[in-house]
Image 1: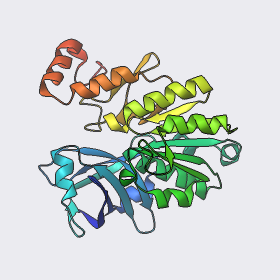
Image 2: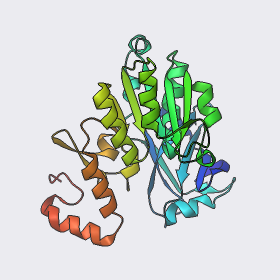
Image 3: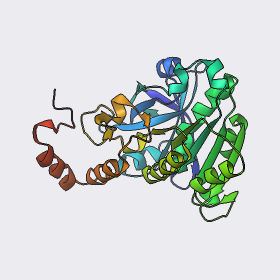
Length: 291
């Protein structure tokens, strides 16, 4: 059992928990995720790691209520425990494999939307700990839905907050702020965008025009985290990939967002799953057709 040491509601329907999971904390890196089950009858829920403390043996997760499983999780309190807490899973951020000296030469911008702020935070923090500053754009619909602002401010070189309704920080979408920064003379060698699929699609559309290589995290489309359900099957360039086993990070300019978002919608219904099973025939188990 994995005890919850701290639980709090960050904002409406978005929760943060610090969980005792020393084996996960010992080996995880930014960009990876865990699969949690609240009890033995619960669904498997993949969640990107928001933070970790190797000395304390803890993992921080942030999640939004989107269904029965996350609704049940939101009712758990400090002192309760998860039945399963499996990880680290997925591939770490590509920054973790690069030379620190080379990273210091790059100008990096992160674009975070909504709950996507949570998986952006450990990457920015890791870079900061290794002497690499980065700019961070954090967007939310309104000021009330903004999360982790103080935490992000402590690790970002420059933090730009924007709200769709202009209630706080800059006004407008994250893409507007990114364009404004470039127009103001900022140059970026790489962009990392994490948030809703539609947000990442339009960030990639802009960065392609601006000639900024862009990495996206497809954690929003993961369902069971093993590659078996097929919900996160996505075309990247001319290859079929699975966000949970091949990612969750990919070259955003190669991701077929329209296909991925259509699949994400279909998997919300049993009818949609049956449709894909009939359409994909022998390749359906979710996938590759070779197992």
